[in-house]
Length: 330
Image 1 (cartoon, one colour):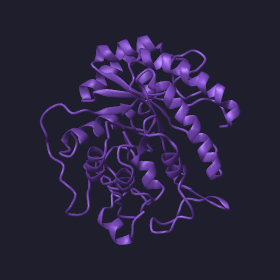
Image 2: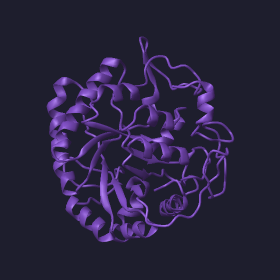
Image 3: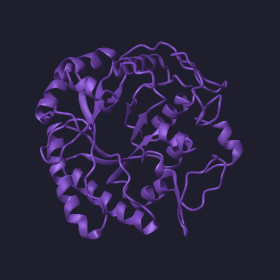
Image 4: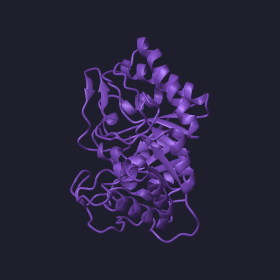
């Protein structure tokens, strides 16, 4: 998507030991390389800060009212939730052993009492084949889910899993279903979105799906799956949520994607190895700048499990501290 000189100049992927190397820094303080990257400093005023609740899992579910209040005290203002169950219309966890399921009205009330708003939600229809014949099943799923999320006053409903795409025709069929989902959610003033991981940055050629390039300077063999989804979906019906960490892990520069497709990436997942800003692998200053300039409306911190088995709340809190101090975060 750019030549080598441009890529290095605008690099938002920073690592002392390679793009997917070992952890670059051990400190909890942000580490940056290069004079173009703004420093992190204290700023005044309450910022808009979102959290994907997947970051906490059972730690939040075991005491939702107090857990949500704890998040608000950290400085978070909005949530992106997950765990929608089609059969019950309730929300839980991805764990098969989970026994806690929350009614949408109860979820809304607990968040509201904590001073938080539910802006977005991750959910995926459990339908394997994205075909024209299955369109009625997809319509049924999204209509029911839209009714539930309307009760939450959500603004976005985001699918975070990639259907099977082996060809450009497959991508067009998936895009058609995404467009229809967007039509359905739009009737409730909710925007349908799609969230990437790394597989979306595989390419499709006449020989089929090609693996993720080993180098960011390797010439793609055909269009990226993410690119096909962007080009075949209607911007009035479908938005995208760019997970900057997974893009980086696929040897892609998030800033370039945001700039190439302005107003398509309305949402960002701000993610790092664990605590935001800790690894030094991503240039969050440039990412936020590009987001603000190109139509980002919301972002959500997301954490995976800590390899050192520390509390997820600890990671979420330290990430909030980093963002509150960052001069480039509004």
